[in-house]
Amino acid sequence: MKPTHIEHIGIAVSNLDEAIKYWENVMGLKCYNIEEVKDQKVRTAFFKIGDVKIELLEPTSEDSTIAKFIENKGQGMHHIAFAVEDTNQALEDAQEKGVRLIDKQARKGAENLEIGFLHPKSTLGVLTEICCKK
Ligand code: ZN
Image (cartoon, rainbow, N blue to C red):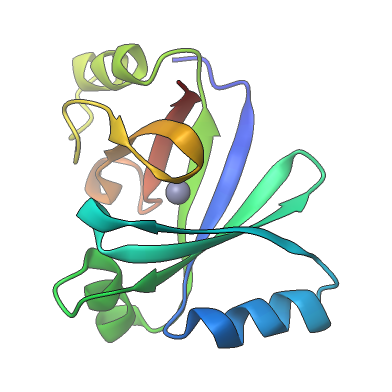
C-alpha cells in the first residue's frame, strides 16, 4: 500500500456537543459536518486543519465499538486514517503481508469515504483506518 497522506485522526468522545465546543472555542477550528454512521453506531463531527481532518466519534449505542473503547480506555485518540487510491486493494496488500484485518471488504464511512480497518494487534497498537474517496 502507498498512502498519500493522513486523511484524518479519529478521536472518541462521550459527548459530541461538548467536544465540538472544545474544538471550536479552545482550538479555534470550525465544525463543518456532523454525520451519523448508522452501521458503526456513531455520530461524527469533522474539522479541517490544513489537509488533515479531525473526526470526533460519539457512540449512539452502548454496543458501539466506540462505547466499548471509552469504557476501557476513556476518551481520546482512537485511530489514524490513511488515504490510499483504493481501499480494497490496500486491505488486500496488508493481508498478504500477514496483517490481521478488521474489515476484509471496504465499507461506507462518514464523508463519502470507503473505509477499512487494520487490527491494532497487527499494527503495533495503532488502530489504522485505510480510506479512499468513492
Ligand atoms: Zn475514521
